[in-house]
Image (cartoon, rainbow, N blue to C red; front, side, top):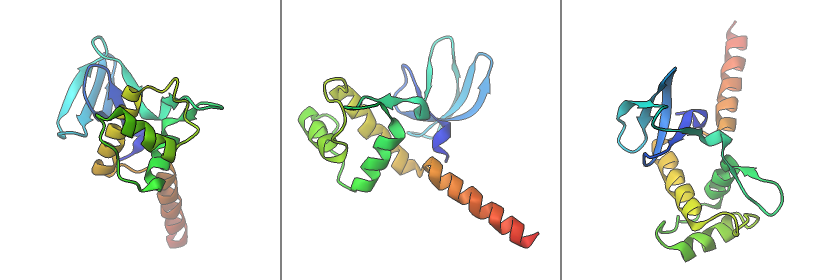
Length: 143
């Protein structure tokens, strides 16, 4: 599964994979239960994860940078219901985060989304680029 196809949909819990876009909405597949459904753009807004940015002490960073830091840390994820544990976790994993503007509800979403992404086996964009480069090199040597 490709990170670039991951969506958050307002009013719906969890993350979704974009299957197809339509003029009046999108067909999405839930990472939670695997169900595929049509979601109307009249009732919901869609946010691609690759477009979400997080406040830091300097410039904003892409959510992917936070996820990669979480992945590299290898630390156990905190209980998403414990605001103090969330803040302590992110202070260790990504200390440049602006904790005055990134709320505990945002940190909770990041932990829950990261857990869903890891469970679903979603690949990060660089991993995809490396796979495509390897495939291209294989095709060139076979051609």
